[in-house]
Amino acid sequence: MKKTYRIEVDCASCAALMEDAARKTAGVAGCVVNFMTQKMEVEFADGADEGKVMKDVLKACRKVESDCEIEL
Image (cartoon, rainbow, N blue to C red; front, side, top):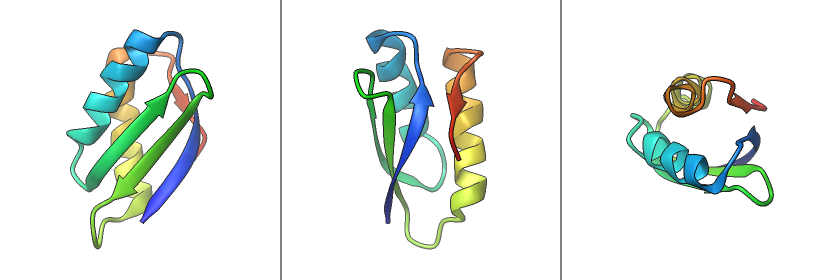
């Protein structure tokens, strides 16, 4: 299942780093962060708990940019 979220990201470089961090998160099968549209598309692994996975994704993204926000 794929889902799109609004995300606050300050630059294209940070967007790429957040994309990599999200892809390494358990339960994420794929992720694309678009800096220009301020959107993150996440593809969840089969059987993954969307809420828990997104909390982990937000935590990983905040390691890149501490003030990152994702509309869950």
